Image 1 (spheres, rainbow, N blue to C red):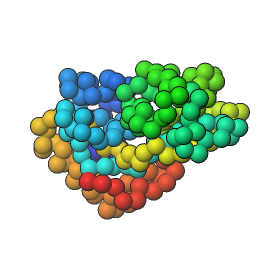
Image 2 (spheres, helix red, strand yellow):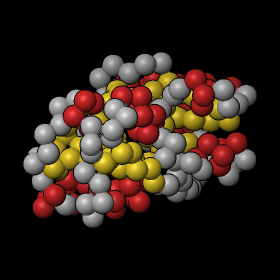
Image 3 (cartoon, rainbow, N blue to C red):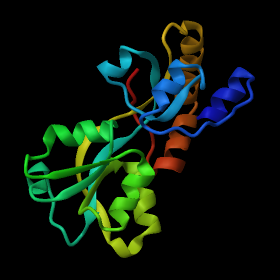
Image 4 (cartoon, helix red, strand yellow):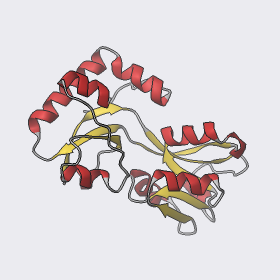
Length: 199
């Protein structure tokens, strides 16, 4: 998506790795111009940054070994769950987890995944793209999707007041939706077409 936007803007794209906790500060301090990083829109974030229209589908769920029976939040009782601190995954899990569940929060996705893969936790709460990679790279875990925490389409974040940039990126997104590019990108990277996305 970054490359598509860069091409349409006639700009050179520099990809800057970010974590869940530093991506908004990077935007606010000018280290990056746009955040395209499985970023969900919520009121707290909207108070400090602006958002474009959604550009891809995304959902957050709980994943774990087939040997553990988990069908819903009540089945998290007595279980340990790895999650990335401050993420939408964390917020969504915290809202539904019973008090007897142990939520282990890590500073970035890499640490969260490592904890689950090394069996420091029973379960993993994360986005579908992260989980898909974990399951593909670690078939011995026997991990599977357990239940949905939240449908959370991805939006692009940009600094407050960058109206002209937001409007232009929204035009690029709208064109890509209309000509099927968004669906093709979603199918390639997330394994499903984008479908209907919110503005």
